Length: 109
Image (cartoon, rainbow, N blue to C red; front, side):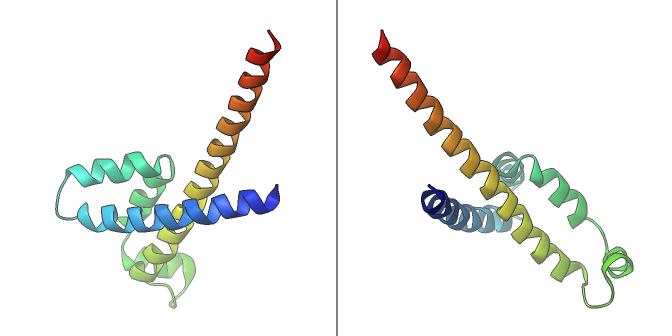
């Protein structure tokens, strides 16, 4: 079971990483992609967008001189994709569990 979850997680992570990267770049050129970015990554996109607007001084004050705003945003992006992948993987397995229970209930009648 754990192997199956891990395979699903890595698949979801890879897909979300590529999609988020493309949509994340496109949102700077077209406003509609900002809404798409927020929708794909909700609820973690709100935190990401809030921290993205912080300047270099904020990042240096909180994390030291080794982390400026660009490095912080890169790390934040990877964490956002990581947590969103965990959420999507959990939803996939909950949906599969619900389908299994539903089939068993229908077949028992």
